[in-house]
Image (cartoon, rainbow, N blue to C red; front, side, top):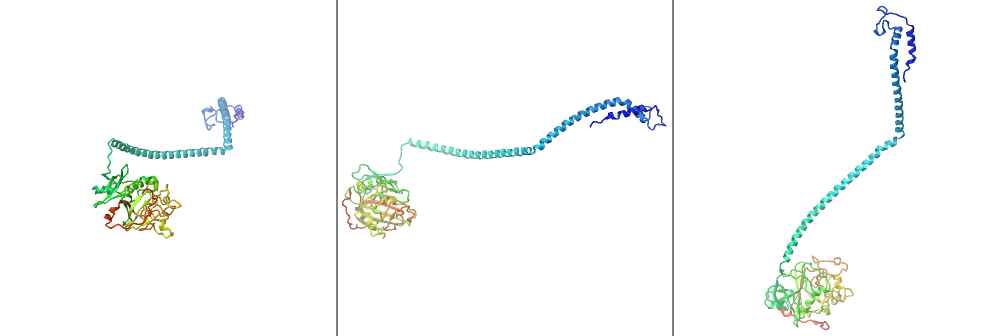
Amino acid sequence: MLPKFHKWLPLLFFFFSTCTAYFATRDNCCILDERFGNFCPTTCGVADFASRYHKDVDRDLQILEQLLGEISNSSGVTDSLIRQIRQVHVSQPAAQSNVIPGYTQKSRQIIDEILRYENIIVGHENTIQQLTDILILNNNKIQLLKQKTAQLEEQCQQPCKDTVQIQELTGRDCQDIANKGARQSGLYFIKPLKVEQQFLVYCEIDNLGNGWTVLQRRLDGSEDFNKNWIQYKEGFGHLSPNDNTEFWLGNEKIHLITTQTTVPYALRIEVEDWSNEKRYADYAHFKLGNEADKYRMIYAYFAGGDAGDAFDGFDFQDDPSDKFFTSHNGIQFSTYDNDNDKYEGNCAQQDGSGWWMNKCHAAHLNGKYYQGGVYSEKDAGPHGYDNGVIWVTWHNRWYSLKKTVMKVIPFSRLAIVTGQQSGGVKDVDLGNRGDI
């Protein structure tokens, strides 16, 4: 607070008024000071001094008091502001404490989002790089394809040249071609009698002049023999100059070859197992009926061979009639879409190929090709029947052969081929067999 100097100023005046003249000397004054004049610093001297300096001191004191008042007022305003600040700070401590954590949390969320977007961007950059590499690779492939396309277009501008060698000689069948002097096996065009258009066959010709016309070949399972009626009629697969492809010549062609004259043909079946052992079976007077008769197979008798006569049927000991219902002589051809067998079901559909199905078979050279030979009911699929390439008079019905060939030659040449005399004729009912 401001000191109250006016309370002691009268006292100073009292001292000043009561003092008499008293001159100081060195003898009567212990301390001499020019500010006190000739007086010693006694009460009167102090009063005299205060009287002379009163006005200046009073003026200075008033200025000081004014300044102190202003300072006091400023201090009051300051105290009021401090109290307000303290009240605000005390009344809102929770709000103030939550401000920083709230912003900190939001900042952390923003940072996390930034990091997540950075990771996404990096992932997209990697994906873009991979797609760019694929694009470059595809562009290179496209360029190669364009070059090959240009080469093919250039080749297409040139006349086509058949690189497959087809022999020049032609005839009614392969034996007729051999009779004309051919001694090389290969591809030939033949034109059976009463046929308007010649067609291509593979002729197997030996040095003795025997010419076999090949009807079927299995050797590696590359060709699917599960075909429909039209495909078996026209033929499928591929003929090759060295006879290293699988094919079926076609029922219509086989019919035209084997029924063109009264001269009978012999059918030879050649089979090979997975031990590379080979066997054969010959059938005399072999013919196929026409399409109206469902390409019925007819032969006169089994002419011999170490593979056995599977076409005659086989007793599987499942039923007393097994042999009768598995014979093939006089049986019509069946496919999955043209059922002509004697079974209440569809043998061709169950066994997966076209064949001369009875109820159903003891020989099935168009069956499913099983690598290694041995197969089971489980391997045969949902039906579980013996659907392999089988010839049961040599190997049982659960053994699928490795290679098979069906080929024909005029029957008169069979004795020359085998070096033996022909066997006796087996009685066969030839009535009501259609055009044979």
